[in-house]
Length: 251
Image (tube, rainbow, N blue to C red; front, side, top):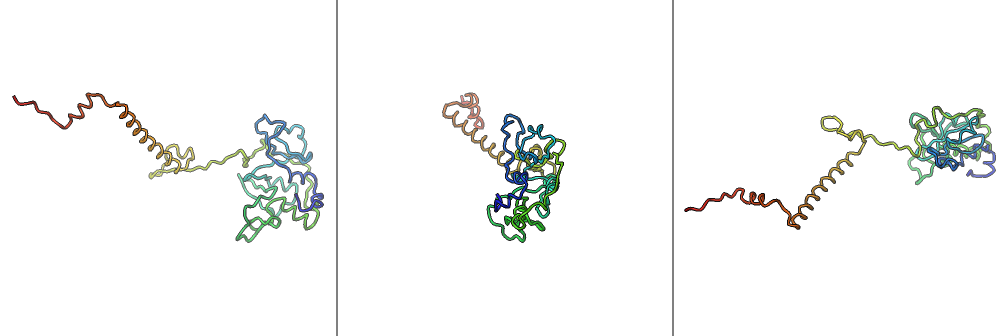
């Protein structure tokens, strides 16, 4: 986990477990219940639990784990009650500031960046030095060997009210893009703004339907021609006589 096992031994058990735990798996005890993702960490028991497991932990220090861009984050307000989070880059989502627990994998090396994480070299905004709590702790342990000066005594840590979700992104939440399609007069076209559909999708769908209708009408014409099915005889005679007057023979 950390660069040396001796350094990680200087961490309190709750912090080492928090950074190594895997959250948002389904709870085995409540696997048949809805909203059974393990997104709550109990600092006193050093375990992650789901909302249905709260009863035995009612008086414990509880930390809610959230998801942002498919990675575990915690609110800055909660993190600052536990440790010094200065110079850790934060992100704002749904009007709440969050920080990543662990570094994210990089698909390619950062380029043309004047600032990067001291620990993992991920590109950062100024004036931050660390991309996650893990990277800051790793740097402190590597340079100083102890974390005690950066940890706070937090006796009370409760979940937000009401409920356990204040609108931050979770693995099940999907933000649908709102696209307003407007006509030349400036008014929204029927149904497009409500559904949030992309205009190219609507045009493509409409074109496909028109082509299908044309093809189906041609197919019907071919089938009826092959079967000898056509308009009634009277209509055929009328069409044949139309525009070609017939004179009665001269006596």
